[in-house]
Structures are given as C-alpha cells and as structure tokens.
Image (tube, rainbow, N blue to C red; front, side, top):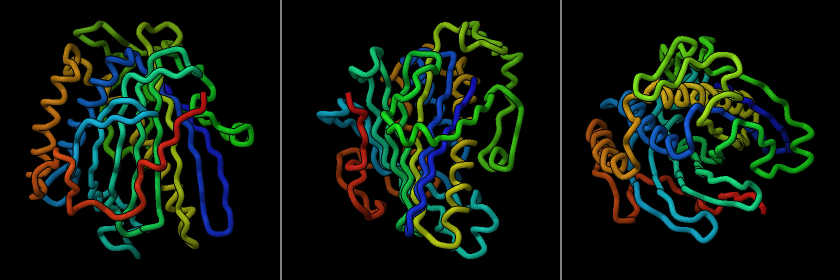
Length: 311
C-alpha cells in the first residue's frame, strides 16, 4: 500500500495555510472498506482511551443533505495530552491537545466527474486552546488503483505548485510520530488473510489486485499564530501522516476480524463501543437524539466548510 502526499503552501501576512493531498491504495472494495474503517476506528479508539484521556463520543446519528446525500454524523472530543510534542508542552497547558471533531460520512455517492461509486468523508477539527486553529480532512474513497489525479477539484495553481511524496505503507519504516501514534507489527510482505486469501503485498500489487480501492485525502490546515504556527502546522501534518499510515495498515491487517460483517452489525457494535469509551472517561452517555451536549466546543458551523467538487 502507498500514500502519495502533495503539499501546497500559502503564507499570507496573518495566516499559515497548507493543503496536503494524499492517496492510499487498499486491497479492498469500497463497500468492504466502509466496514473495515468502522471496525478500525472502534478498535483504535478503545486502545487509546483510558480514565484520563482518549475519545469521548457526544453524538452519532444519521444525517441527510441535498448535496452530500444520506450518511452518518459524529461529534467527538479527543483528549490527547500524552501525545503532545515536548516543545509544545513547555508553553501550552494540558488542554492544548483537546480537539473537537465533527465528521460527515456519506455512502454511496455518485458524481458526474467520476463514474464510480464513492464513499465520502469530511472531518473538521477545532482546538479548545488554539481557537483560531482549524484542520479539515476531505476523503473520497473510490474503486480505482490510485490513478485519478484531481478528484478534489484543485485549481491549476495548486496543482502546479504541489510537491509529491510517495510512502510505502507496507514498509517497516518508522519515525517519531509512528511511535507516538502507535505502530502495528504487520509485515505485509509475508501477510496473508486466512479468510480471504489476500496478501502478501509485494511490489506492484496495486496494478494486479482485485478488488482494489483508493482513499483520496485532502487535508487543509490553518495555524494563524506568529512564532510557532509553522512548527505546529508541520507537527500536525506529520502526525496526520502517521495516523493515515497506521489506520490503513490496521484496516487490512485486521481483515479476518471484520470480514463478513455488514454496516448494520457495525452500527450496533459502534453504539456499545461509544458508550464504553464515555464510561472509561467518566463522561455522560452518548447523545443520539440531536440535542447538543455541553461538551461541544463553540465556533462557526463546521458544516458550512464542506467542499463538494464541481461537476
């Protein structure tokens, strides 16, 4: 598996804005990936939540939108104090890495610009301490092998200035953020699924694999703070890159645990998992009726930031 990361930087007088485009090829169908991702999110949240930090789920409910279609909306609070870089913890309090995430997951979604079924996800992150900070991730999961060059509809200027980096997810390369996020021990050059027979992932597997799909990600980050904004921006991008790598490795590495399940089964497990996470943190129960929780961070409506590619 590979990620291709592309950077477009724009640094006006009072803002540091970065766009990072990535593509992640997976040996799964789009339909399988939806289940795999739900399972992976639940398991990684459980692994990283204890009585003092982790993931609190405030809302998890269906939504319907004229442009996006039908899908699932979630509102979560991430308390990640132990994962803060040492330099950040020197001048920022413990809640500097308390993040709110709003996410819209829509599937399936058809568009005239790509003649295949896609699974669309939009995430918006805001920070309790750095109130002007915002990070968004728009992901399009498409049934191809990573050859669609501009699924997010970037401008010619952005495409002309982007820098491309290719990372092999199946490799055993590790860096600082890999250890902070947590790194699995899968060796995909030797791995083979007992239930599906898929694997190992050897050189060139992307062109030969069936089924195959790609997660196309567009990360936008704005850290408008003089002095440390650029450093915080780069740290967050590196952290996201490590998280992309680890989460997609786990989607395939755990295939024998989730294969054969469907979305309805996963939704039932999701409710149990969400309640369990909140209990670990000693937080109120999950909000499912649409009533806003007191835990919500204040700010502009994040849904207004949803960016749908033009047809």
